[in-house]
Length: 464
Image (cartoon, rainbow, N blue to C red):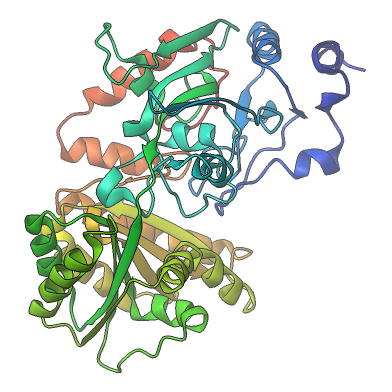
């Protein structure tokens, strides 16, 4: 037994695993990127144990990669420098729910859907809603500042985190934020840790804002020949101040994958499907839906339909959330995988950006499909490639690089959600160069050094 194995076993006993088959389960995430095999995977079950493991790793110069639900699409939670993977799966407790002050305190590996099931029994919910919410953890979504289908109304995760408990590289435990809705107490370390991808500290607990559940929902599905009128329709919905919670778009190929679960028959001339969700009260839903339907029809879609049936609305919403998985299963049956890129542009530039992306894809030898959160200008491009062929992977990688450049040209960003990870490091440099703000990267590295002087936490992510 070597020094590392004996040290970790002293801290965790048999919750420090060194068997290759056990390690293999925790090496990969939902991305196509390849890890460097770690020495071990460890399973702390308390903040104190996380602290002891980090103190040991820091003292011995051992890299540490933290893992939640493993749903990252950028390689954010795979070991890039070997070392040790820390799985947070034993920290799953919901510690407190306070409906008077509207917050919940949870450990980092609580799954989003599990939290919402518990909150739902009390008439509350936690708004961030990534597509992977059935497996995504609170800690992982905080680490990547995850978005989701309810982003039009509720924004991304950072708006809903009041504070965190986190362990620094040297084992020091810090508590940021508070249980109050307002706080002005010097530098906002909570916001700094949101989106830091495990490079600054290990989040072990979070204080989250929660909201009362809405009474009623309705949805509208509309089909368009081009993206311009769909964007105009969205401007109208915004100006009307209607309670739009979801605004999604799918190109024709994406609708084809989704159609089986919804029984959708798309008109031959339709290129895009738009899905609009409305959250309202029992007394206001009918009038809100009437106005929304009028505004949609003014944009002259090929066709549209509205429903307030809870079953139909839930089915449409679930099908959109599961679209990536449906697509992955279908292309997987052909021996292909999905390499996904996601960017964001101002809504006023969305139609132009989609046009440029479609031109790029038309020249590509790889298949692709596009969908995204139209209400936030967030585009997901899914490239279908043989992940076992380095030539395919390299070609798809070049497509994602061009996708990022398109977003930058239209005043957007290379990453709207999921973070930078391993995949977008060069794109981050490209964006900062376009903004003439390379100093930002220098400041990020200085912050990293202040939190983690020995560079053990998730090394190789965001920047080298």
